[in-house]
Length: 178
Image 1 (cartoon, rainbow, N blue to C red):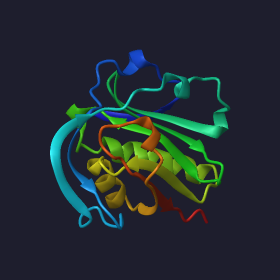
Image 2 (image 1 turned 30 degrees about the vertical axis):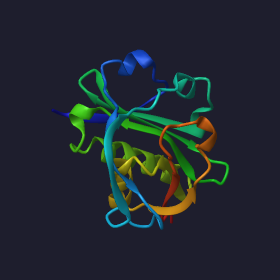
Image 3 (image 1 turned 90 degrees about the vertical axis):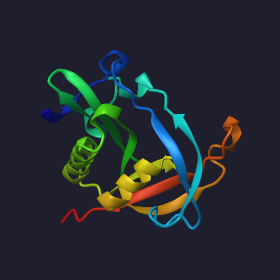
Image 4 (image 1 turned 45 degrees about the vertical axis):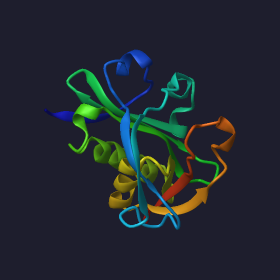
């Protein structure tokens, strides 16, 4: 399978309709949230998926202010990444998803490489993103990529009434833009 990462102007729900972006939760990251190979507890397994927010991927945004990158197998989208210029001048990864069938094949790395390239082209000093303590596959990926967990918010999801407590983790990759 030859996957190609490319930048696009917009992405629709129809473009990713054949993808399964769900993931299995079998463990969660725990305090002090510094090392996801060490700060972990096992939990009863369950499956989780996030909604695709189509309005974030419209072409109405300023072109220099955001990046949409997709990983394609031929004409089929197998993963995507949305990044934007954050209020604090970091590139902010707003969404990243990889189809279950192509995980561990470098798709996430290819998409993140494109986000880093865009951040450097834009003169931004780093990349910031947020994930949840129960998305261990993502946490491990970010840590292996070189991100550092720079912050924790225990209340961000509290008002949503989730059955399980989720802790927001903020990850940072500082770039050498010189």
